[in-house]
Image: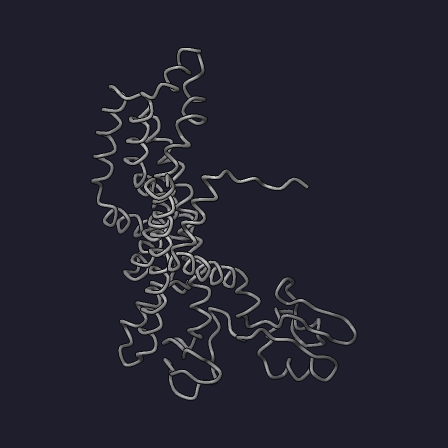
Length: 344
């Protein structure tokens, strides 16, 4: 099996990134948190991970079983929190539960006090005003916020790099026309448009992602355009043109690698902005559908329930830690690609 051979410049950049201990540790912590939340269903769920009943194994997380599968009375989906079903399974088998026996939408009806209830051994971070476990909603909310930001960053960066590359490489009248169009498009009131559209359709994850993609791609246009304007007059670009190499081949094979250096340094900050945008929209009530787990919805819970300080503190700390980690990662990436360091 062939090993990947990194260039000396890439190795040097990675060494400079690791030298920034704050950025390196932030990347490790962020990746660990994200990887853990990717398996949220195995950590926080109101369904058992595994059931052994009458000699057979059942996997409720992957397969939907009816109550009759466990010799119950109804054909509806089994409620594994029902004391009747729990006792029935325990008499002829056993169950393995996740670490947190609640999903993001599970309502705990056995609270010691009216919801929102404070932290207990059963609900480590308490519950919200509907009796849902705050820790479970935090884990699911972190995942959906980061996934939204990553998808928006990737697709927005592709469109932004393509638009900026076309502007900078061809220049002239095309650059002038596209630049005026971008300036007009950037001046559109995004929030007001979102409010108007939210009154016409019910927003969901993909609808909201598509709408934000209409404006998010402009973050990289200016940087890529400047790099292409600078690189298109280099001697090797002029030589490629003289040899008859197609323009798009020159753009993506010869000019784009130079522009990607500046682009990569912006990506952590773009991800930070995408997560902040979703959090703000959810906080204002124009984001994901009601009941969806998100950091912004948790922050709104804290604002609406000031008598339950654990809600506001949890939401604030989660948002602050997430955004701080991304900023520290961005600073480390920026230092790693600093030409004054990599040229030494």
